[in-house]
Length: 170
Image 1 (cartoon, rainbow, N blue to C red):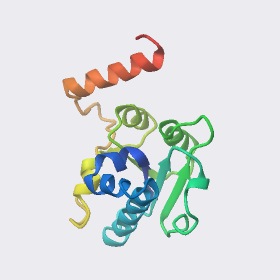
Image 2: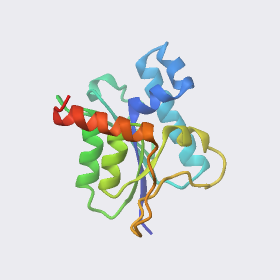
Image 3: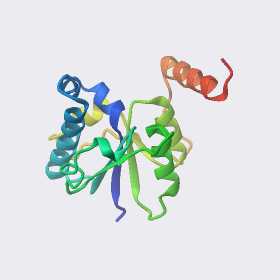
């Protein structure tokens, strides 16, 4: 049985959830702690992942050491001049242990590229909407049988805009 690991686009997830956004009024650290707490509850309630890797822009000096050792939750900060999106993709490229990765992000760049690296995708709204409802899956899996998920025109436009920006075509 493959190890199932969720890689979370940390700040993307925080900015998509009203409860975590409220915690940002206290501090960014409070919002990060809230996400870690949510992941810990998920692990104890559902059991469909063995580990969460939460990727944040920044460096480990901003994270208190007390939360970095939570069982089943690994906090990863980017290196200098590296953003979380690229770090997530690097983690997927470097993975060689046969784990089944699910990337949790609503960022089209991250989602599209993560799929190309063999990861499944879970939207942030699904991530927050599924805790405590058993093992019902809201994960969009890659399909190798030629049957692909269709993008909405809005999603397609956003991806095209992101690519134009990435390639310097704007």
